[in-house]
Amino acid sequence: MIKRPDGTADLLPEQLAGWNRVERIVREVFGRYGYLEVRPPIFENTNLFTKSTGDTTDIVEKEMFTVPPRGETSDSYTFRPELTPGAIRSLIEAKAFAEKSFWKVFYWGAAFRYERPQKGRCRQFTQFGVEALGSEDPLIDVETIAVFADILKACGVARFDVRVNSLGCPACRGAFREKLKGILAPQIGTYCENCRKRIDRNVFRVVDCKVDAAKTASLPAITDNLCEACKDHFARVQRGLKEAGVAFVVDPKIVRGLDYYMRTVYEFSSPDLGSQSALGGGGRYDGLVESMGGPKIGGVGFASGVERVLIALEAANVTAPPAARLDFYAVAASPEARAPLFAIVQTLRAKGFAGDLDFEGRSMKAQFRSANKSGARFAVILGGDELAKSVVKLKNMADGGEQAVSIEEAAGMLAKGRTA
Ligand code: HAM
Image (cartoon, rainbow, N blue to C red):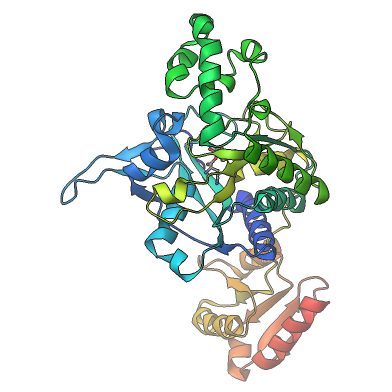
């Protein structure tokens, strides 16, 4: 047989109970904060990602699922490795900023990165996240962190850390970049191959290097090299977090793997995740919207990987409630009763009751076995006698009691059964 591709997952009913629970909570919490949903397409013009995610990132350099130009179009398309660029593009394209200057949007959807699969690292994964567009207020940075923390708590993620940092603005970051390069240049020969490549293209990623972590520990911290405006912004983010009761630590090592960030960046991690410890991350990206053809406005957001949230929930022994029980399972006492029984099932479903029946022409005994397995409260039985009298036999699966009733009466008893 042909198996599913590496780095993808099949979600069957058992797993989906957990997934749907998380999705329900995510939507509920985002709703409580006033974020509105957007749903951009799953693939976009490749240029959208090379220009916004950034062409020095691992994502763009190595991990994109790209479909080369073909047929009538000269465009190359890429399955989105993240949802931020598409979400912003969709608002710019809809001229949404002409209608109002500040937008808070959220999304939930698949993303694709050609990474080496391992626990918590997939080639197709699902992200939820927010983008708050149109404000440079540090309090909105705080809100995006708070909403993510609230979601994790509401889901039941027992252990997570919030680490925040500031990357400064183009002005102070430019000066710091040169300072870092000056320090690193004489010793870069002793660093790993990636760092040697990154020193010119994106020196901040050297700070982020796992291989050379011991060497980079003594490098100066960006937080000690911020301009006054960035220092003030970062101080206000920290004060806001404290006042809102969100626990966090400042970690100058957080640089994030995407090009568009400036000022606030943050990561949420969990000790329950193993080597892929990031539950999610985000930050501020003033300038990105304008560079994509939109107005000159600030923006901040985060995204989280649902697969990783579910790993953390498993570690915390959080289980999803079982699927809702059926109200009834319908049992045909003879082959002739099957079609009229189906009509009765439809009548009861139309009244809002959940019910099912056999489609394999099985014996009554086997049908009752299915009724038991389904967890239904009642069996609705139809045979020749009932057909002749226009009634059904309603059997209470818990106590075995049976009575002949009209469809209307059956509906009344099914409704009562729900509250019993
Ligand atoms: P990111 O850090 O690249 O940021 O991804 C966010 C989260 O997505 C990660 O922390 C992780 O939980 C999950 N994730 C990423 N790659 C994988 C993978 N291969 N398998 C499983 N999960 C994965 C962004 O994507 C930014 N768009 C976040 C953002 C929004 N920044 C501002 N707004």
